Length: 119
Image 1 (tube, rainbow, N blue to C red):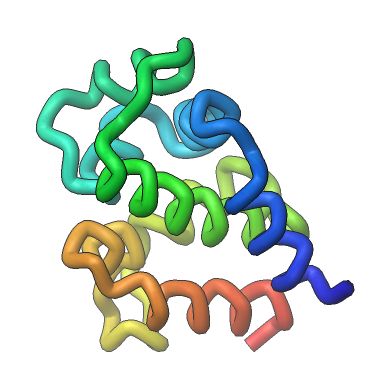
Image 2 (cartoon, rainbow, N blue to C red):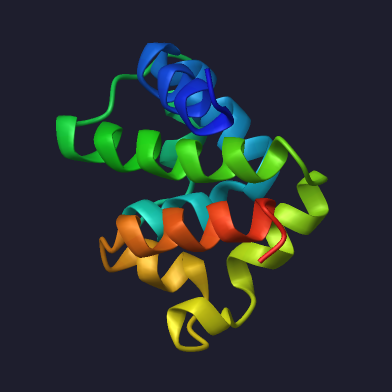
């Protein structure tokens, strides 16, 4: 199984509380909330302790988790956070977190995969 397949499997099988907790630890509540389109960053903490998000929010949390888990397979949390907020040449110098906020997950996943593969 490839790293991408492992990351996908993990993103769909983890409890949402685990997903939210991991994102909170890696990116913080504010960046996580921004990426998934939530106005109240404290909601991320509530999801991490068992509150169930709406289906759309859950899907966006899982997409963000998939990106972060892929990056964490090769990088430190601080590098992942810097990657998320920095200008990315594969996204026309837009920050990945902005693209995720605008629901453009596929280009961010491709950029993350290229980064992990050294591109």
